[in-house]
Image (cartoon, rainbow, N blue to C red; front, side, top):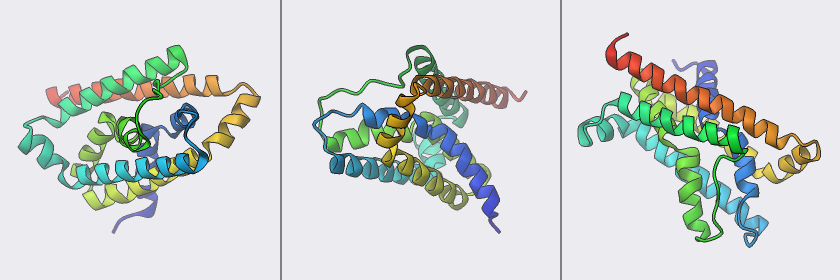
Length: 200
């Protein structure tokens, strides 16, 4: 029987990887031409696309990765760890997770960069495949639904959240602190993958 508490704990793990704090910044960096209704549609579409991608990897990720592409799971974990480390360092150093261009349609933005790599990035995909192989795809899917649901809610309230944080000059500090945690998670993923691969 699936424990609700255990699912919530896994959801919190995925939530840390997805990093909803960064979405507060992302939404406020969207081109000014996008109206509030457009932002809501963009947030919902990007989260649903990311959820569909991650659930697909939960059920078929091992086949896609190992049988089709012949890639060891630890290689994906290292790649995801490197991406997280670089993203975390950029946030720590510059106070930004990434830069958004004004070019491109709303539909394109919903897929790249919002759905992937901002939500369903290499690190999240690697963790999804790994967790699904250890636990079960259904178990992981429930956790992903909770995590991405929370991420979507935070994104929807991001305009108000950013205004409140800016009032007390807290946004920059929170981004850098989050960047430090993201960087640490990336390094931890790399170390864990190397240990597993070499049997330490």
